[in-house]
Image (tube, rainbow, N blue to C red; front, side, top):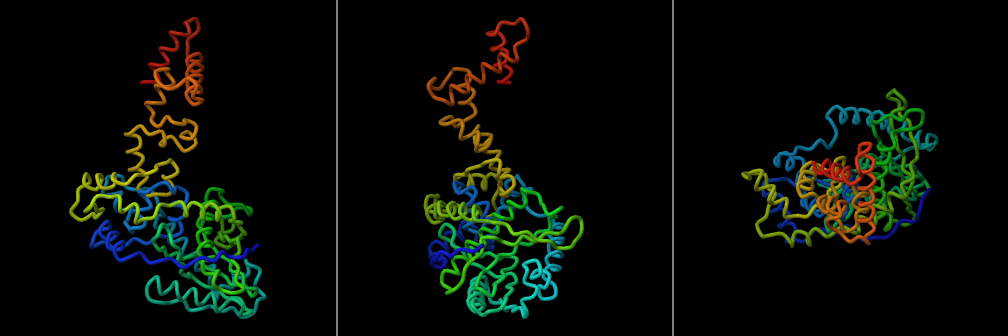
Length: 388
């Protein structure tokens, strides 16, 4: 299924002043850590986190920063999984992508064009990819772009993304191909992993739409091809995944991100996340200058999640209990406020959240009261247990 792409201007390069400020934040000797589609999908899922938006925009290596803070991250692929994924991808693309085209139903397409996408730097590769896509569209043949480079503006800074492959069909339709090493057993894969792959692919589709808006006759398919090992073998199989929902959410959430220059402008002069010559206390003080929006989902998507979780727990923030719980509690923002409201020591009785907490506390006390013990005494004992 395809849709007419939305026309949009190419990503704007940061101003000289902003580039200098981001270099100061990153550290003069640190190379910028590139943003990828997985990071952008996680950023779009939590657009209220200014900390991640700034660190990603500045290209700070969050894994190294988390380790320096004393909260090393468990996020990311193991070396074994990385090597297995590369080997599987090489098998899928072997022999000019014949197996990949078979999975797309294009085995009878005849000659397949394999454009050369090499260029200097990510900007050059993105420009070369855009040219190759333009030349392939309307050529009447199938073109397979292996690891093209796409550009997308995120919070005022350009991000460069590299999908596994993009196939240009004879009718001018562009299809994103995502190759993953998790298995598809009996034509079904782990729902959480498929969801993560769909969110990642939606970022690629969004970036492709920016290119397709300037190419006559081009359209971007909103059904991406997910290629995985079949059952318990290393043979590839595929499934078409509709990413329209993920695309809509990603587009909306990325648009909500505060621009990086606005976040940087609110920080004290001289603040930096440079790891060289700085203690964990100094780095922690610098990181705490930028507001965060921790949620348990961050543990599966952000390298700084353990650090932010510790700080949220230390502050007693209800966000540490989950977004759904936070939404139910209304104006109660700390665990202390919640407990006080449940005990009847604070909060307006007419507040639905306060009334629900008091009702829950009463039911809990009644359930925990031993047989023959007055309810008031049982309530006091239950309250003491809750405080402990």
